[in-house]
Structure formats: C-alpha cells, structure tokens
Amino acid sequence: MKNSIYIFLILFVVIACSTQKTNVAVTKKPTTSVNDTVRIANDELEYEVIIIDSGFSTWLASMALPRNYYSQSYLENKNRQYVQEWNSRVLQPQRYNPNLYEMRIDYDPTINYGYEVNYLIYNYMIYFQNTYKQKLAGYVPSR
Image 1 (cartoon, rainbow, N blue to C red):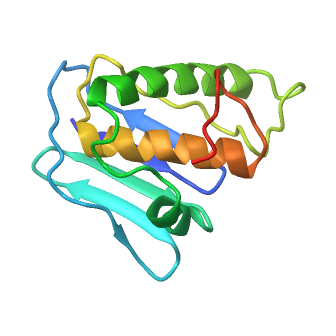
Image 2: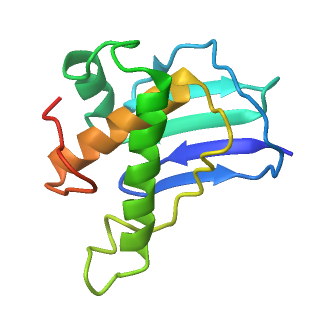
C-alpha cells in the first residue's frame, strides 16, 4: 500500500492508505518550485507530502523555527490536536467556512511519519492559523 500525505491550497488533505503500523523515516529535505510548492517524496517508503499554498514556502523559510527546535513527539502531539480540530470543523460546514475546511485529514498517530513530515504539517498548521485568523487548539505561536 502507499502512504500519502497531501496538503493543498486551503484544501489540506492527509491520506494514509496503509493499515500497517510502520515506522517511516524521512531523509529528504523539502524543495520549492516556481509555483510555491513544498514537496517531499520517497518511493522506498511509499509516501509523499505536497504543500501548495501561496506564501507558505516563504513563511517557512523566514518565520518558522528551525528544524530540530521541537522534538518529534512534540510535533506529533500538536499535529494530533490540530488534525482532530480540523476534522471536527470539516463536519460543521454551517459553522466553519467550508472553503477553508473542505476535506477530512486522515493523519494516523500510530504511524511514525518521521520528523520532516511532522515538521511540515505542524508549520503549515501554524501558517494556516495565522494567515486565515483561525485557532485550532490552544495557543497559536506567531511563528
């Protein structure tokens, strides 16, 4: 099976197709292209992360705290909280803007996606909350 994570412009989708409880290690750094896309891919580990959001790669390079500032367990915990609230909002389109929360995120906390994937998801969530004036869970750092 293939584990995939996709993060799109305001359409933030994480798909984990495997039911296996596997550890996934990320060794590749994100790359940016002309259309402001951050991508991590590793065919051996069968997953892909794509983040397409105008301004995110610039924000990531200039505002995000450096890699290894937070532990992987901290990032996983925050991502679990953010994803849970995100999914709750997807189910309430009458209360939350359905253009912001279009699709459910299937983030499986039992899968070790590795540091880089969790780092990018966490920072996208911070970017999203600050850019779109949303508060998913607790204190939202400005960077």
